[in-house]
Image (cartoon, rainbow, N blue to C red):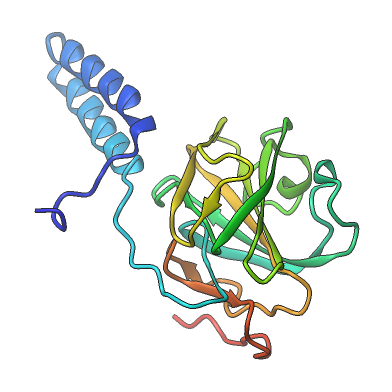
Length: 228
């Protein structure tokens, strides 16, 4: 039964209840509109799903913090509000559309050394400027080896609410859930110096499962092509 029923993130139940109540009321007046509301209620349930994931076990594995498509891999300076480093680091951007799982997951084993929220705008999350100007929440995680990995939750055009359930000083494991973004968003992952991306632009990520890098590996950056 556990494998058949996908859990719902707790943050979704108020929305699901609201959609269901509206659907129930509308059905009394119009079956056509009520049917459309029923579809929206089903989508709401689907959006807030939090499926079980099998996280690869490895001392230095960095797994994807979210589901979606890798839209950009480039060097960029981390968010300035962290006051962390001014050195450009490799940033992997993952765009989550409204049909992707929006639960966010811890990318690496370690301890959360810092959490910093920054208010901002709500540009389309697929645009490059979203990393700089949009509302965001940053988690800096220090691994057992001392290397630091940064994951940034970014709100989008439709997503207007970032929920982070983690706390500074908390010990975490790769693959654990730590928050959710409503409703369509982006997650940026900053790799430490010397760590190369093991994914390519256009590749689909599975949160908590896809290995995006390895703190213990000297492997070169992975190359590839998106094929039809």
